[in-house]
Image: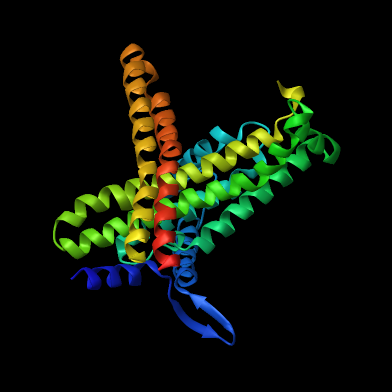
Length: 231
Length: 75
């Protein structure tokens, strides 16, 4: 019984290769990401058809409201100086929100694969440092490592590596943990009970983690682009 | 014998949950206090509480990840 249980659990946790093209193995997370991309592109095309400046349709008003509230969510972390990065962060928020909750439709969330979260967090740290260099200039950016005193410079440099590790481990661990608990519940009690757990683990936790990832990244960007003249 | 030791290792790693539990409990109690004192700041406090709870939870998640890695990689 225990052997079978642990074997089933291990099968759920590993990320399978769906098919191979030549020497490249296409894993499950990639295919689910394609599905998410297809859904998002389809929605984007459907809601942005025939937009008008004068007497807009009801659909257009709803879409505009949604876009404005999405901008508001992202900008609260970015601040004034990092406003130009709003749309990248909003895209990541939409993708992560859909990716984390796709477990509801019986698919494995792609963020359960460590490679996906590592990729996302490397993109985040590159954007953070790029934004810092762009806003302050190379010299001032390099000088920023010496603050508040020169002795802490090694710790500041170390932070470049710590930030993405903590970002990707948080996302990966949360989704993997939620997924594992859900699969265990489904094995033990297949009826009714998973609904209540799914509400918390799939919807609430998934959306919260997407928000946390985006909020922290935009907070770091806001911090990196902040110049003294604005204060 | 070694599989028992692996199990012990994984169980010890999950002890990080204690810290996260205490941390979230303290954050929530303070949030309740501040909402009672200033009900109009409800929205802001909720947002900060969720953020803080998610950050405090991260230590428990690290423990969980390490426990899973111990079981999967050292088996």
